[in-house]
Image (cartoon, rainbow, N blue to C red):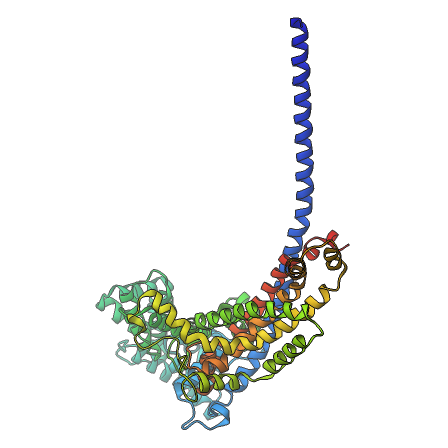
Amino acid sequence: MSRRDRTDDRGEMSRRDRTDDRGEMSRRDRTDDRSNKRRWPEIWMVVRGLIRRLGMGAAALFGISLVTFFLVNLAARQPEVGAAGTLRPGGMSAEERENLRRTFGLDLPVFINLHVMDRGRRVRKLLVDLADSKHPAKVHRAEAALVRFGTLAFPELAKHLKKAQSGSVRVRLERVARSILTHAGWVAPVGGWRGDAVVAWWQDKEPRFHQGAIERVVADVGAGRPGPGEYGLMRLGRRAVPALIGALLARGASAVARQRYSLALGRITGHRILCEPGAPKPELRACLGSWKDYWRSQETRYRDLSSWERFAGVVTRTRYFRWLARMVTGDFGASSYYRRRVWDVIMDRLPVTVALSLAALILAYLIAVPVGVWSASRRGGWPDRVLGSSLLVLYAMPSYVVALALILFLGGIRGPALFPTSGLHSLSAGDYPWGSGVLDLIWHAALPVLCLCYGTLAVIARYQRASMANVLGQEFILAARSRGIPARRVLWRHGLRNGIIPVVNLLGLELPQLVSGAVIVETIFDIPGMGNLAMIAIWHRDLNVLMGVITVAALFTLVGLALGDLLTLWADPRIRRPEART
């Protein structure tokens, strides 16, 4: 072969190779494009399902908030009634009543507030009532209220004194001003606190009540400078409360400064909640939360609202909006029984209930799915009838009956003491090594988990049996059997793959039922979980804790439904891919 022929052959081969490579690359690109086109509808189906579930969840939360709002307002209006309708000895204490009022805003309108009041409007209304000589009781109440306002009543009080002529109204205004200034520690002039003297004093001292001057005094208090800080704070009176609250709740405030701020606020307002420097974090959160509740309920008495705030206050300054904001943020106030923040109390017990519920749910699925498949493979026979009747009886048995029977026959009362009947740990569990501690926990949780899972097991097994019975009669199962595939493989690989889809969707309904069933089980077995907490809150009429538990249980329901939808999308390709339905 000549050199030219060899060159032509090599050139022809290289052209063929490049053509083949381009063809292979184009086929790969087309395959990737087709796979991407198939993948995007699946992703969009998942996203659309999540958006739809979030919308339904928001509507459900709104309905839950309305129900709990009406319940808590009905309960708060009858504070002297105890658990099960019994009368509580002595009724509610003044502290508990004040806690309810601050938490639920019982002094606010229910849904719409057409008369949004702030500091200036309240003071001006009281000054008008003070001038009403025809109603002595109203005058007396207005005078007492203005004295309680303290230095917050200026500058409106000084303006009315400047306009007032000699007479009974001027005498009342002078009496109010004298009480306020004497209590604040201001030295009276030679002629005493007459009207002109009060007006002259306010014109001279007004710069000391500006925001910048107040913040400097508050900074002196936080730094521990007793001279200018304490003396200036006493003279400012209630005018210093907004700045003190802001400094107390600031993130960068030190523990010692917070102690000084809370002590100063207690002296001024009478709400004596002290934030100790070395207190644990739950106690510190309880102290700061108490001051947040106080400020939320008293804010409009200490400052003036802008025009936009007054416009929005038609909705935001209402009882329902305050409850809705607390429910959305998880701030349910302070517990009157535990003397801690409700969220801290719930978070201490929530992991116990979640762990028990998940263990019961997993155990129920592990037992119920094989039982349902086995029953469906023998449908119509006597094993199927016996098993179906047994599951029906099991589902009909109340949980407290099953719990008491287990305690009676397995807890050592009428039978062997195989399992403990209270708590989740032994008394000396703290001395056990890690593995022994886990075994001790499983040993204590055996009976509670069994009580929680038996009803769910019966429901899932019946659903699984009905679904598998429907699948085993379809054409693709008959075709698989006709090709000689073993019956066990047809049942567990082809049949279960399609028959488990309705059972997966059932997960969203069983999880909240387990959480609600924990109320009885945890109370009987003395387990420190959410159910036991709900019973304690009902008995001691701790409305804040009870509403927190109800809201968390409702969130469990929404999470369970969303999880069921996602698992159904994952298990059923007909939902993810519309072309798979045909």
